Amino acid sequence: MIEFAWPWAVALLVFPLLAYWILKPSDNRSGGVLRTSLFQQWQQFSNSPNKSQRFAWLHLLISFLLWSCLVAAIARPQWVGEAVELPASGRDLMVSMDISGSMEQQDLQLNGKPATRLWVVKHILAEFIEERQGDRLGLILFGENAYLQTPLTFDLKTINHMLMETEIGLAGASKTAIGDGIGLAVKRLKERPAQNRVLILLTDGQNNAGALEPIEAAKLAKHAGVKIYTIGVGADEMIIKDMLFGGARRINPSEELDESTLTTIAEMTGGRYFRARDEEELKQIYDELDQLEPIEKEAELYRPVTELYYYPLALALGIYIFLLVISQLWSLILTRRFTQS
Image 1 (cartoon, rainbow, N blue to C red):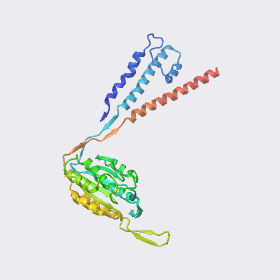
Image 2: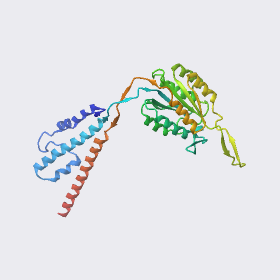
Image 3: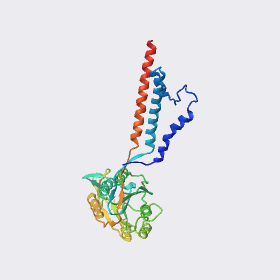
Image 4: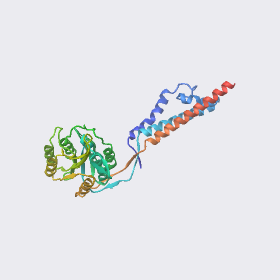
């Protein structure tokens, strides 16, 4: 059914009537009509007083129609669908993702092609999010600092959209504030129902920025009942070409990954530490997280809402443009008649 988000705006309908009453001339010579430049040319359709009076009423009617369309748009009409019962089991999942400069390292593959760590994480995480029906999800990004990209919501499409728009440097690219990424997640999860708070932390480095140390943040998470699953991202081995001397050499691109701290964080909070060295391992991790026992809770109802304000707005614009074109054409016709005579 159709509802108005701001029904009080309907009161604006009386404004033109009040203006007409207040500004109404004391005599009848002008017909008591509010005049605008667009409609002044309409009076030229006829020299007959009766016809002129009819056009004056038409002027008022169309003006009020335009105003009514604008008021309807301001009132924000919405189509509210039938209530949908959300699944009665679910979790509050917060994803805290590292977007520091090291996530640009191209040591992973996606569909058999070389890709950056961030690109692989985003695409596989997007698939994981799509399967989270009944769960509330939120997204936190951290680099030199941490910030909330998306609060906890059932709107998985929005979460995925914000995830895919994530780029290196949005939170600073030179350092990694793992502790702050955990702390912000705990702050957002602690008000949620107990035994229903899960944080998935993805990083490829070690904490070297921020106001909160990772272990201290983990203690706060444990106290708040937040279970943390940590994921270390990055390959163990990478072959690079030596441009100076020729040939190739093997390096460990994940040398800075602090697996010890990530493991401690997970164990302290009752979670687990996972190592994602390639695309397949990352998928397996998400599959395992998918098997986490959901928490039973009371069913919730959700009514899908579709905004309709642009329909009356488009109608008002269409009427105005049509009248403007008609008036200009009539003015052109009168001008030609005058010049010919």
